[in-house]
Image 1 (cartoon, rainbow, N blue to C red):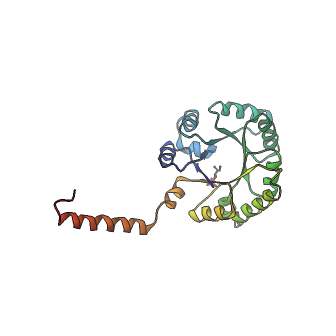
Image 2: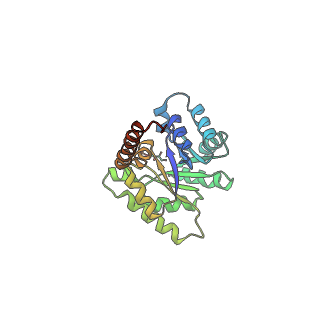
Image 3: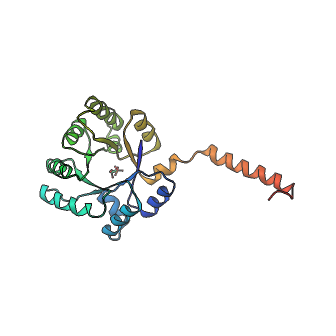
Length: 222
Ligand code: E4P
């Protein structure tokens, strides 16, 4: 399973990339707005740090403007995936950009039918937002199961990857991996939680204090 970071924070991106954990990045207008500064510089820098796919989202809502904006975003790097919303214009833009060889991520997907249509339009990625469904009392992970089943039924027709988005906690990641989703995009705090376990912390403290005791009683040990 590929791991993307769902962030526009350069410090977090560098931190997890240095650990070899990142296959790509997803951003959106809200994440860029949270970082402040000039979004163009931030987007440019992300495409330099990360070798894998970097999703940059259009803010246009009309087809021809989306195409123009998508092509502009693509100039930031060959690894840019243009993110378009799950609308009629978005799907039309998805078809045009994809047929020109520009990969597209269809975002704001909340139903199996939307995922099916995004795949038909030639999307490289479809982004179902599971946390936001959980927030309104619907089962986000069930959506991933349904999309996986549908895509598996038509493996020869669809090459679209399921990019599980709006992840809120590490259990979401385990469930998505069990289902066999292709990609999860994680906020930095979820990735941080995944690498920690209290028994690891306690175990390391014990190893170090036992070693110190041995060292204190033996001047030959450095
Ligand atoms: C995905 O590409 C989106 O950026 C993201 O996962 C949205 O998550 P949120 O619901 O936490 O805003």
